[in-house]
Length: 245
Image (tube, rainbow, N blue to C red; front, side):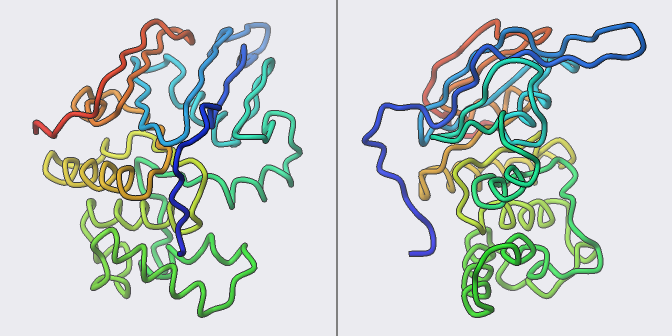
């Protein structure tokens, strides 16, 4: 199998954020973004992080994905203490363990859908045939097998986001993290992307962490945590709901 489906026998969390602080300094002013934040995510959960603009959602997601470091505290993904890794260690770790879905796709315009999805595989010890097998499989999964030779400018916004999702899952990552993945889409395309994320969660049993300001998107998650001024203020446990828009 190209993709590992985890049977969740362990109660150990796949993600632990332990007493994390994150701040920025501008001149003599210190701006606190996250304050003594703790969060645990079990393997296979679909989690939504909500909060107003400036609440620290994206900062938290960047810490989880190893794109940034806390000023204090620890971030664990499985047995990896990623908050203490060097930059080179983090780069290698992210390639194998994080699938990032961006709001604005971040596709390379001169590359085809196939080539955009293949990019992260070029950093792994795979043959050309192995890369081709993976790319074709994930493009089939996201419904773009007939668009693999198209460049981003020849695709709709929803189709470009599907390419972004295919790129995120092609390395079979430990975590899939999504930062406002429907924020640049119309209602129909947003619904289709959320349907796809829900389907991937259910079929591949991957852990998905979704940052969103849209309650309709958050409804797809099994649990919703709310951030305000860098602190968790509410946790809502739920079963993922059927789409209502």
